[in-house]
Amino acid sequence: MAERFAYPFEIPILDIVKEMDALRAECDAGRKDAQENLTALQTRLNDTARGIVASLDAYQRVQLARHPERPQALDFISRIVDDFIELHGDRRFADDKAVVCGLGTISGRRFAIVGQQKGRDTKERLMRNFGMVHPEGFRKALRVMLLAEKFGLPVLSLIDTKGAAADLEAEQRGEGFAIAESIAAMSVLRAPIIAVVIGEGCSGGALGMAVADRIGMFENAYYCVITPEGCAAILHHDIEKAPQAADAMKITARELAGMGVADEVIPEPPGGAHWNHAAAAESLREFVLRSHDALAAIPLDNLLSARAGRYRKLGAFLEGEAAESEALSRGTEFGNASSSAE
Image 1 (tube, rainbow, N blue to C red):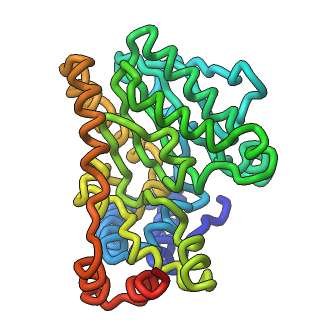
Image 2 (image 1 turned 180 degrees about the vertical axis):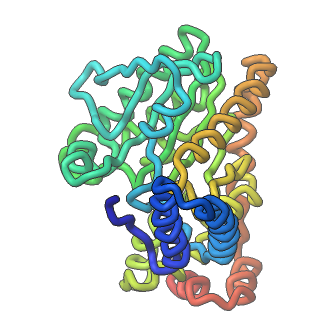
């Protein structure tokens, strides 16, 4: 069996998993007490994994969102979508492999599906540009969403990106305009939209495909305007302060659900989605079906009105002395740095 990747805080989980693998071999060999020991180890594994995840700080959750074995869009699609038909190209320039689009059914409900795919090995990651979407990717996704509007289908968007492509070619082909066009179109799309942050949800690369009526976030996903490393580099010129940035930015699923940015935190199996793709997929299926049925009962005009109201309510802020007092009361290095920079 190939060696599994684990972060330092996951080592206790990995040790138990190795014990269980050894016991399974003994079960296959006919050892009678091995199955009882395996059951006991499974209980210990679940308790250990839940305890570790419950104690994680914001940056450790960012690390789990980036875990190389974490399920990606195509992993979820293969598990919960029946009869998936992939659609390619933006009808203008090219087929962006960072975006997977198509039509399919989930437990009998028809969907138009768009998702961001990072890739697994080096070859696939390069081919998919590590999930960083070029203008033609946003246009491909929008083309499929407009098909959804035309044929009366709901849209499911799976978000997993560090941000939109930032190379010269992307700028030359209108990256900023493509993101803005997608946001504007999704704002008034006459179809229910469900967005789920399955891993990373950063910057315009995420927002350009996440304007939705209902937003779910996996328990260890994060959603923000910039990566913690990018924030640390800008504010402190020190990427090593990314953990402090992650904490100050309030980017975890539970924090964002508390602020109304996300509607629901989707539970992950003990230890994280990367330990059990099948269980994570079932959690996603349940959220999507529940959201679909709730949104399907709302007339489209009311849905669009509620969608507009949702985004108008976001972004509460303080000004002047109140803002300075709030930053000082936090006593955080990042809050003080932001105040001094202004």
